[in-house]
Length: 163
Image (cartoon, rainbow, N blue to C red; front, top):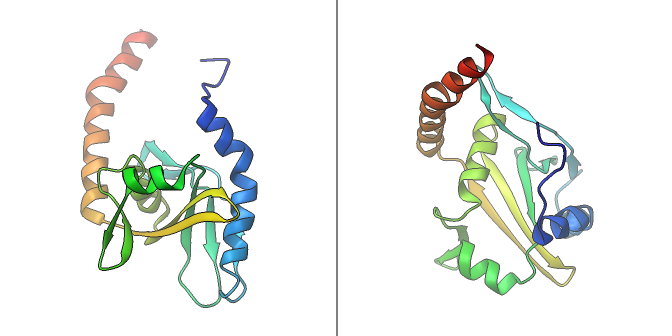
């Protein structure tokens, strides 16, 4: 196993700013009664231990169903919006080809929650929240592909190494 973690400048920025971003999210959502952010760690899909997800938090309040929180800390909100977001009838949506779409879908599928607040945080005056809803069809396709890959490539390799 690798001893050191692979990190980039962007990853380090996210690690450093995530607690600040979560507080900004909490402050911007105080209109939700009894809003709480729960740390949640790794969730593993039952029956598929090779599929897991670790959302940044589970958000609960007295007025809405529970949802996930996924924090992103881009250097530029404008670049983030241009590359990851589409607008339809005045509402921001995460593009299906966004690098975060699959991540949020798998997180929702594994945790059983129906939506994610994707929160982009540059600094306190520059944020964006995009609600992403779960697509069962998309998740099922990802699970099918991951299962095929695991069974046909990873598992045979593990068996070969163990022999």
